[in-house]
Image (cartoon, rainbow, N blue to C red; front, side, top):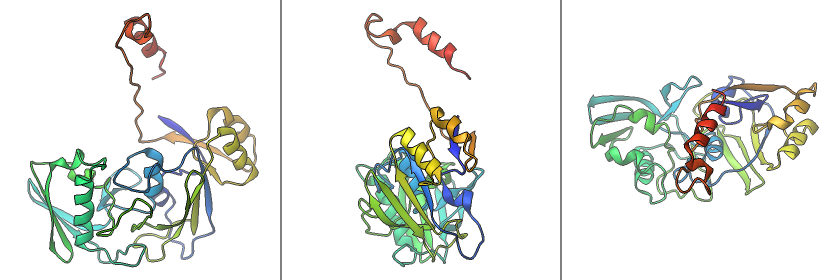
Length: 286
């Protein structure tokens, strides 16, 4: 599915915008149709929330721009038998409060993600039997049965400091650290100078939440935001006519499902009629 995005991709700033410049330039302001549902990276998997938090939180593993799984907080890993995974942690990682990353943080994060009553990862991580510290740089994960895609699963789980409660604050290891959050209005973050990876393109980023499509497009035209990550099709033409703006579209990795309620009487629920469902299927441009 293609998504209309102006200038750059808002969802994941670091892989797309990573650069080697010694000093990042000024702030980027991104307009979005909605804000994060929660600041807790373990209790939601909603797209907007994940796209924002992914700039501040990281996992043991992650995805590169080509969606290949690569080590992030892990320096490397090995799989000595079909149920055992051994991860060596990087030495140069610090949380936004200055604390170094330790195996205790990884154990706490993965245990929280697989046992917290509101965690969206409980089912996915049910295959994990045990997470334990082996030494000061090593974490061992034992699964209940062979799970060859475990490293892909771990790319989705953010690592937080041991004992930290992330409901109202963000304390990750990512390239940006949160500086201001006004629910339903905006979230701002600055470059974390102790970040272990490449220096990002911008010194600071603000995500501004503007629900109305026309107001958000006008803010882009007026220069009050630099990017509209949710540009509506109805506003595309007037944005294209602006000499200082550009519209770009490309395929994303998200999947959209159309779920139909086919129960009940066709007289009250047209979708219960097979012919209606066939008509909908034929109308979809594949």
